[in-house]
Length: 99
Image (tube, rainbow, N blue to C red; front, side, top):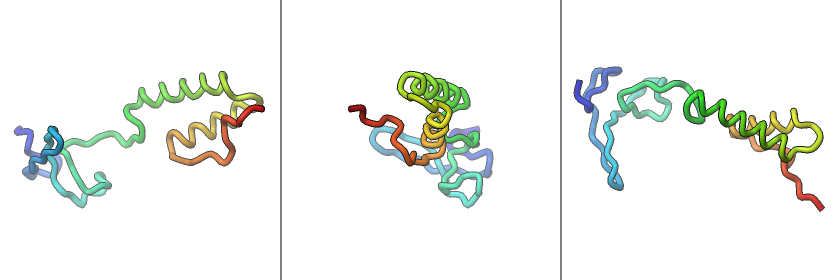
């Protein structure tokens, strides 16, 4: 089918252009698209890229924990993951200033 046709909702999409980019989209009230716009494809429910990105981020967090955290690494990792994956700001600074 044409790139300006949405196979999900069976409607024509409108072409948008901005700053040298162009894309097709249409307004929808479909709850699978919380921002109200469909681009003609369903994406997995994820916050930070692909599933493999999550694994890479977790590995990097673990490496950082081993490098910087002193003491309770498990709690430090929980705070870091909560921040990266859920946007929760940690109560305690994971990198306190050393005197």
